[in-house]
Image (cartoon, rainbow, N blue to C red; front, side, top):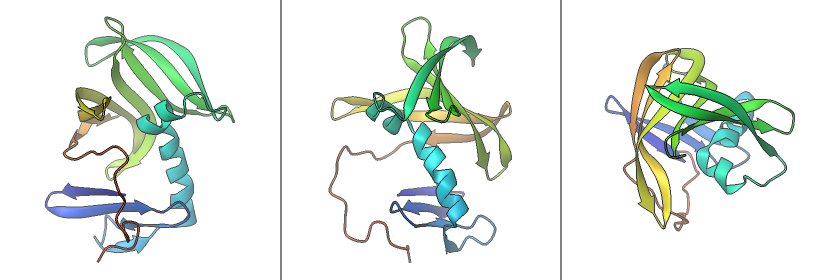
Length: 168
């Protein structure tokens, strides 16, 4: 479940594994996700950082060195995360200077269109002994379109009853 405030409007993205709800960007109403939405979401979950690192030894993934490059003036080693069908889900950029995660890039769709999304991680927070990106900037096709800040994160919290139901 993701809830995001965008210009004062709450945007919902809820998935219970077989169905879900989302905010329609045109009408701002909450609608059921389509089968196509659910398929797209599977690809998104496949490139989610927690999923990638939590299941890194799963046969569904392969990490392939993809050369060196530069992101936002930082030199990186690229690692492509590939699914068992051979499709690149995303590329992770690790800083050459110390091997820490610097960025992620992937093809995606946003409210401003489709393209190559580059997420540059600006800071990390430690929760339960695990470091998570807590602030990032997202660019699409070289243009900044979002600045993200994680304000609340819990590792293995109690999930309240109704958390994946349609919001009111």
